[in-house]
Length: 90
Ligand code: SF4
Ligand code: SF4
Image (cartoon, rainbow, N blue to C red; front, side, top):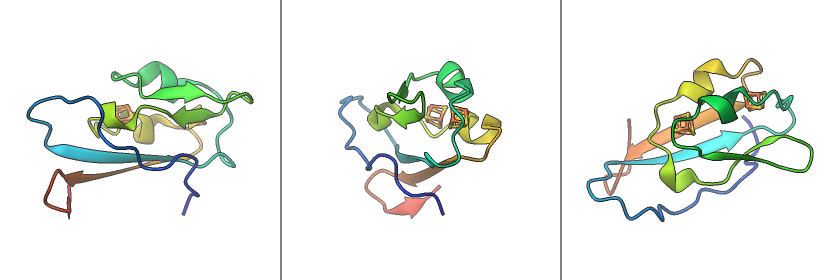
C-alpha cells in the first residue's frame, strides 16, 4: 500500500458534469522519476518534486483514465475513483 505522497485534493476545476472523483497516489519510494506518467497524462495532473519524483499536484483534473497507473514501470501509482457524491468505487 503506497503511502500518500500527496493528499486527496478537492476538485477545483469547477467542470460541469464531473461524475468521477479521483485520488492519485504516488509511492515516492518506488518512483524512479522516469517521467512516463508526466508525459502520458492527458490532463497534466503531475508535477515533479525537487528529486524529479512525480507528484499528483492537480488531482481535481484527473479523469481516472488510469493511463499513468497502467504504464508506470515501477507500479508506483494507484488511482482510486468514486462516483461524485455517491461514495461508490468505479
Ligand atoms: S511513471 Fe512511475 S516511476 Fe515514472 S515518474 Fe511516474 S510514478 Fe515515477
Ligand atoms: S488517471 Fe489519467 S488523468 Fe488521472 S492522473 Fe493518471 S493519466 Fe492523468
